[in-house]
Image (cartoon, helix red, strand yellow):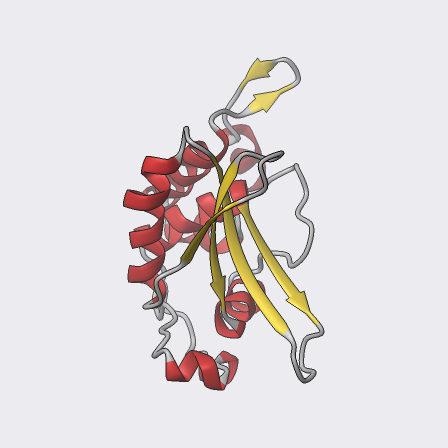
Length: 171
């Protein structure tokens, strides 16, 4: 089990008021949620450190196809990991989606600084974060489960594939 250092410096006064909690160890649930995040998540910092700054972590899903998973899987997972229930909103009619939002400085900074996930527009080329690889096979399986849930398939060229070849080269 990998322990994460305390992250009290990430907590804003609003995070403290909501009694937000950040994971202190890398668990299989954190690996699952990171797979979802890499597939469908976005971390946004608007005017960081300034008055009226905004930090948003969101997960976008298709509506109505993924409504059930959003309500009964993803929302409870985020609530158990971070101690804050996400807001759920239907996106624009053009996009036909459903989004989960957590407005939290601590979560965005934790994901960016501790877990090494990018902020802003994410690349369409996903990679497995180092902390997931360091946890071992169970963490890797849970990450792939979350990523598979988010994006549905892995494609290399014109054929579906899994990113295991990349892992062997990095080992």
